[in-house]
Length: 113
Length: 111
View 1 (cartoon, rainbow over the protein chains, first blue to last red):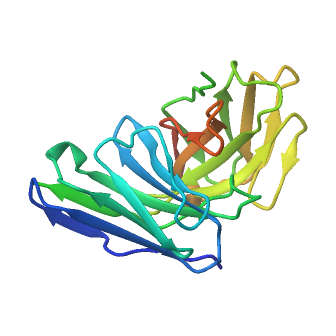
View 2 (cartoon, each protein chain N blue to C red):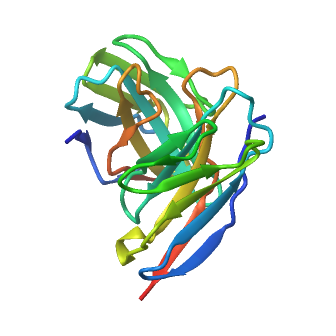
């Protein structure tokens, strides 16, 4: 079974803090994705990566950056957290050819106070 | 923009077929329709996808109309564990691998 793990289920940070969300997958997948999920807005893509050190902006990249130094790990960085970044963050991975079949982690609920 | 519209919520009796509709009237001719579901407190899970022929797998069946403007996901014998939010998804044009998830249909299976 594909396993996608995220570093924390719940996280509370203060405004202005730098926040790192980590995601690790164990199936040697080429693609990795970061989404945020908000009530009434569904899932929105923040960034995705199709290879090590490669990244592409999604629908809402503002205020976020990403890092992919190793194939299995994809990090989402909030340089200076703000209250409007309070959300559920979901990481996913997929193979290069089967990109549509994404395997999701359990999510990190981030609260910025 | 290729987007989808789905009912906000639906109920289904346990053991009966659950039919979840989706409208995707602006989908382009070579774009697939994908379905995912999200059980409470979990990440979304891929179910099935199709282009223009009906598709079936161990989880569900997908019926796509001939004009491809709409589709229906069918769970043939719904169980309580099928209670979830179901997303009908298309790829955002000219973006490579970006999905438009929308807000989905919240299906409640009633005992």
